[in-house]
Amino acid sequence: MRRWNGWGDDRTNYPLPDSAASYLAGQIGEGQEISDITLDQALKLIPASRLPVQPFVQTDPIVRLRHAVGQSFPDWVANHSGQIAAFPDGVAYPGCEQDVRSSLEYARQTGTKIIPYGGGTSVVGHINPLPGEAPVLTIDLSRLNKLVALDENSRLATFEAGVAGPHLEEQLNGRGYTLGHFPQSFELSTLGGWIATRSSGQQSYYYGRIEDLFAGGHLETPAGSLDFLPLPASAAGPDLRQFILGSEGRLGILTQATVRIRPLPEVEAFYGIFFHEWESGVKAVQEIAQSGVPVSMARLSNPLETETNLRLSGKDSLVTWANRGLGLLNYGAQRCLMILGVTGDPQTTRFARQQALTIARRQGGLFTGASIGKIWQRSRFLTPYLRNTLWEHGYAADTLETALPWSKVIVAAQEILDSLHRSISPIGEKVLAFAHLSHIYVDGASIYVTYIFRRSVDPGETLHRWKAMKSAASQVIITNGGTISHQHGVGLDHAPYLEAEKGPLGIDLLQSTARVLDPEGSLNPGKLWQ
Image (tube, rainbow, N blue to C red; front, side, top):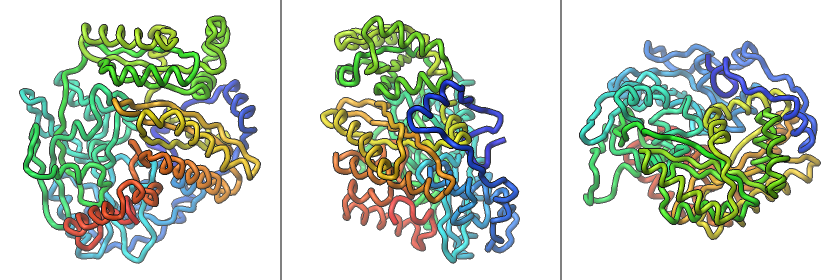
């Protein structure tokens, strides 16, 4: 069963070995076990539903609790402390497009706000009801999960938008195809959610981001239905699909999506390459991208992330090998690890690996084979479970990300990390903050930052520490001209920073579009813009 106050299936755990706990204590201090509220206590805090009785609307407290928050840091604090600001008054589970239209009509007649819900994996507050007088109906699309059509000749597949990643791939793989979209939330996130937040999969360099894969679809809005034809290209005015990509439920509810698929790859492999230091690794990754080498991924960790990942893995023999074996080869404390992925047919993947290794070696890269890559591949969707374990040990963890041109990547990455340390040090606390380049482009890269710090017995103080660091890092991103989000979206947490990227007129354009499709402003209020 899915956890009600954490990440993922409650039968899956990410243990924290004693050596890893000691490492964290040495870096930021001992964590303390802090009691959180129980499920029974949380259920008692839920107020009565304000919705009129309707057979297709569930108002059970446990259903409303499970749809009240997502996976953002404020969500975690609220869920564990019993301080959730608002709950949906009911949850609808449509089984077809007509059910979605009926839900929208029901909401119109009752003056209800609507929150579209996919997998509930948002880390920036996409699915949270806001306090207010109007009741809130969450529309959970999980029952819309079927493969509707497969055009093998055109390599197009049409799915209902509530399909989760594993089920989508299962339905395609059985026919010999894949979408190839693998975000870290893959286990739980949905196709509609990927589109609504402009998601990026871990191998987007090969498969493309979701905007490259999204060919067309069907949108239900309070103003009516809207279809996007799955055309290979069009010069017939602005591309309306771009309004839906990243719209975060403000413009309508996507019920079907047509996506571009590929045959299952004959070869897929991941390898480890060590560099002496961050700068040479960045140069290698940049040259790989700008030379057009057909790799599927080039993920470069900075020195502290390289070390921390080894420590938290619990593989003490690997840590010993890294310290001794790599040390003898002069890959010391500043070493950085790149995970290189190749995907496709044997000839292309062999060429990609050879070309990437040639570039890496010019920058001092040490190829270590497939062992580390296999470890990464096995744990690629397990890593989010570490957040549960850290929380139980008295530590809080969060991530933030951006994308910038290559000319700013190295400086911005360091300034972001420095801002996290500066913002928490005045209260006598420390943060373990590290970064990697997760997605690469010809003109730049995304910087993905993880930061771990100690929880306080006071939930408000824990949230205060996070806000100080999040705000400081966000200001650095804006100052450096980076996007406030490369892949997580805007939601509530990033809404204050959106105007810096879009400009006042750009915000007006988004709001005017929303007024056309949602005249009464019932869809997902407070998200994207405030």
